[in-house]
Image 1 (cartoon, helix red, strand yellow):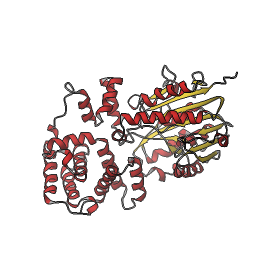
Image 2 (cartoon, one colour):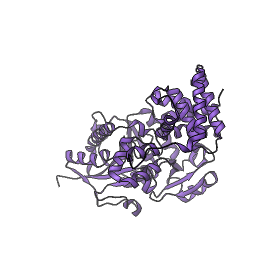
Image 3 (cartoon, one colour):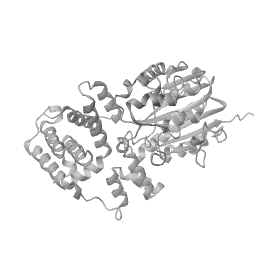
Image 4 (spheres, one colour):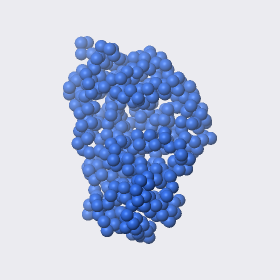
Length: 461
């Protein structure tokens, strides 16, 4: 029987194919239950699953070149075996070719988790094809960019053709290549210092014995990035002591741009697990009130636990579904409101590569309508003169300028707020001509975000 790490990776890939779950959800559930795996095996599982998902179209192109059987006639289970085998041969230099081939053949023999035995001819097909790949991988032809630029970039970088085409239209050839290359690189781990308990210098010093390449972030004043922690993040003493939250640099800019002040009343309208909630509290020096709402009770329970770890005492949670009518009288009015809206995630494909295969142009339009609806739902909760920040981890216009234009058309008492800069000049450099803050992975080395400050005008004055 095959080794437990590769078997686990294969079963996770099968889960992704069969269930409407995100890669994050599948991996988090697996990690919580994977007591049998040591650190090395867990690292291999993650490398295989994320790698196969990230490079799926590229791998399928190689398989199609060597296979006499068309891809659509290969069973999903065997196709995942082949993808894992080809991924190891193409991208994992430290794994011997023989190991990549032999373990894949073993996986093919026993079906999913050893439940059934595969016909001998299928096993021979996997064995012969992967050995052929190992011998001739360097000679695989790829689409010529001169004859079909979109297809060439899509296959080489493993992105859907519709997404490549829209990036070519917006950014041009060179920048599209750079964006695709950056999105395929595994990002650093980025955390935000909890200034209620420590400072950035002290946190960096405490992380240095356990990680490589510990550096301050460029734009986020409390951010630190690092690579290859020697132990899991949640077991690090600084984490257990509440000295930081894991949060990408782009996400850290959202709370900075809202710029909450001590003693104010703040609404975190799509709080989720509370990454931005904790940041808001530390910017307010744990003085004032934050109402963190979400439709998911499980997430809010996790948020409460994390606030305790961070030493935050000013957060109250409430289950609220912004898709439904709000009982505004029960929430009251706020000085500032943050809407970190659910979106396509096109800006975080470095971390969530499954997003590029799950998204369509129709999905983008559905998200944008929902985002306008969320903004409209909370707009009445803001005091006159108050600040509403809209943020999405997306690079796509439908969810960015399109949402703001649609919202402002329906709400003439709001306008893009241009006169009150955030806390540092670095963040201000991200502001575009329309007054929105925009980041791109290939330009700023952080997730792609769109963030804008809207001010509610007092039309009676």
